[in-house]
Image 1: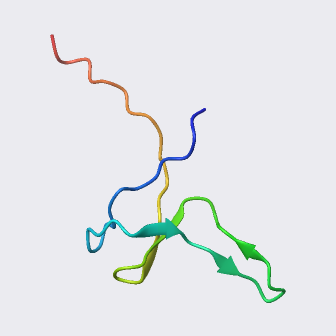
Image 2 (image 1 turned 90 degrees about the vertical axis):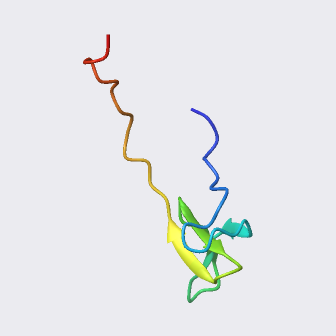
Length: 61
């Protein structure tokens, strides 16, 4: 399997200043949940999730 995919643009504002979203627990532990990103331009956090691979349609000849 390859490395995790990195988004190139924020889905909300289109800016490129993206970083992995970090969550700080009450105990002070910092984690970065899988697939979560934050945009430093519009200050939004979002997640990405791969749903699966698509099969090519069999109708084309």
